[in-house]
Amino acid sequence: MSSFSCWDLPMALLALLCCPGSGEEAFEVHMWPEQLVVESRGSLEVNCSTNCAWPEAGGLETNPVKTLLGNHTQWKHFLISNISQDTVIYCYFTCSGKQQFKEVNVSVYHPPKQVTLTLQPLRVVTGKSFTIECKVPAVAPLKSLTLTLLHGRKMLYNQTFEKATPDPQEAIATLNVTAHKEDGQHNFSCQAELDLRSRGGGILRRTSEPQALQVFEPMQDNQMFIIITVMSVLLFLFVMSVLLCFIFGQQWCQKRIGTYEVLAAWRRQPRA
Image (cartoon, rainbow, N blue to C red; front, side):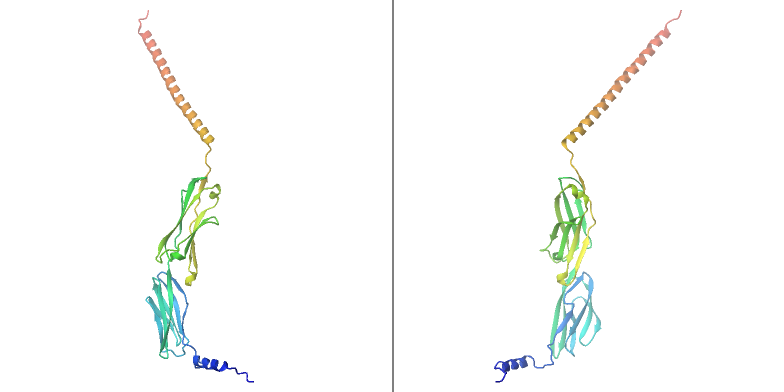
């Protein structure tokens, strides 16, 4: 009995129809890198290639300025400059009268160049509240940004911006905190993290200057009473001493004046 089953012949015919030549490959176009992310007004390099041995034409279509850096039969290397907004670039080749293209999205970002942390107030009594505010101006895409408020190495709060627009915006994170005695032992800071890994980039981090909080213990009622009492007694003694000095001074002056008048009258009397 032959080992060639009834299914082998149809499968062989199907393979011949789908792959007419054993040495032929499907005409493809490739672009590298496949994900592009660039800082605003920045530049990037793109390689456009094909598996066609002798393509009739090929190139790159994009709105920003492009410069051809290298040229070969099956690949072209370009520099794209002054990219100011999100865009799409197209790599194309024509082979045997057929054209194929590959498109790649270019994402533009604005890094967190400045991170500012503010404590309000800087001096606080234990048990009272204070505000921690972190600001990052003109950052994008805001959806990829996370602001983290830190006390020493301890994370206090995370702020994300899921519903933000792609345009550069100011990012703000605010937290109201009740002061504790140990809050003055470590500095407060804010870390901005822009995660571009989903767009083909990396993670950009920047941290604010550390800020110190001065925490004071509240005065007890009896301490305040003692302070007020002592101040009142001292004030009373001061006023009394001023009055006594004034009274004794007046009496001394009157005695001196009276003695001089008696002596003058005695001198005016006729002498024997």
